[in-house]
Length: 341
Image (tube, rainbow, N blue to C red; front, side):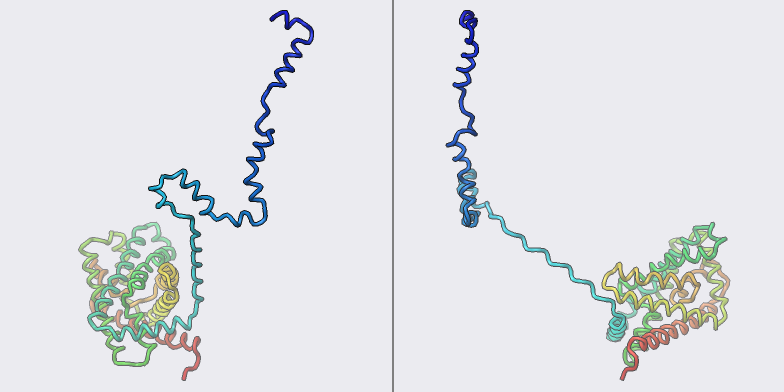
């Protein structure tokens, strides 16, 4: 064998022989290439792809790959229906909102006195939670004592919790009912709604005084702040208390008006927050809030009498009624609807 490779050209001849006997690659074989490309060519013909239905070409493959007992579980692909577009939010319409509040007044007149009492009792109690939170938060920050403006703003930022609870639970405040009972046509039921709401708001507020005292909710700082604030309220001149009541319930009823215009809970809370924060920050007077604040301060050691509390709440309630009826029920309504026959 060594002799054979030693001859000139032997190695070249051997290489040539090996090259000529190597098998032709599969992709150069004409018959194999045509076999692979045949389905693609058939699909390339016009209309060929459309003629193939999914069940026509997939079923034989499924039959070979899946046992017959499992074929019943095979479900052909179906197009899912497109999701319905979310409805566009209704545009803000203050005229419609005023009409809604008038309707609310009629619904209140249809409720029984017991139902009104229960709803208003809850309203007084819920507003008291806002008062408790306001005093505990502000009284717990003694560094703010030297900055009364910032302290008042802090109280205003947390007090709207109370009205948020009332609006979202559809409870009653007599200060809001001053407006809703003025808007419909006059009726003896309006006086019934207002008197029951007033009495029940007072009962709910006094119940919260008992709860807060028994549960020791007021810290020493909060108690001192409340006694100081309530003593100032009790010492107000009647004319000042009345005017502060007008301003407070003007803002409260604007808050109720704005909250009624929103169909969502977050929208209602956002709409009422700023007007309520404003009336608290400005130290205006609200009769239902005072139904809790004055008795609570008295229980904590404030030096004023029951007669002082009653005088303040009565004068402030009159101012609250004037603010709701004159500035929202009359002036605001006239600005929206003009002369009505």
